[in-house]
Length: 104
Image (cartoon, rainbow, N blue to C red; front, side, top):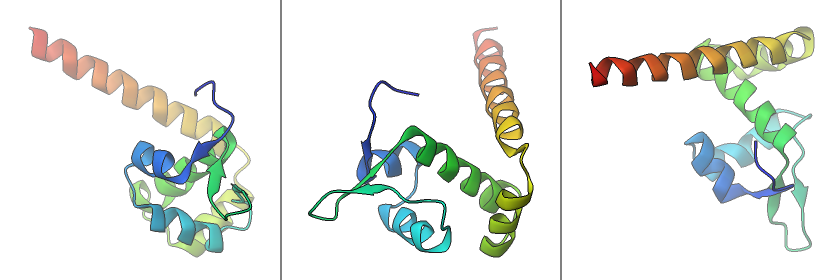
């Protein structure tokens, strides 16, 4: 990911192309998502928090799971990290092939 240990909520929201309010909402819906908060209450996300958010977004957006379904899937599927890596690799390959096609 990056060299930074913590990422502010605005940066994470921009990275994932969602509103910060959605990230705060997911925090209430997914007990495993617990970003660090400073004394002022500002949220800071680790790379593992961001990976979890990507998994949640993949399950809800791409796979059509409800929030409850996504929670269950995260609990049940220990191979989800491997599947997410595969999705990421395939997405990158698709983007690369699309750029090659444009160059032809």
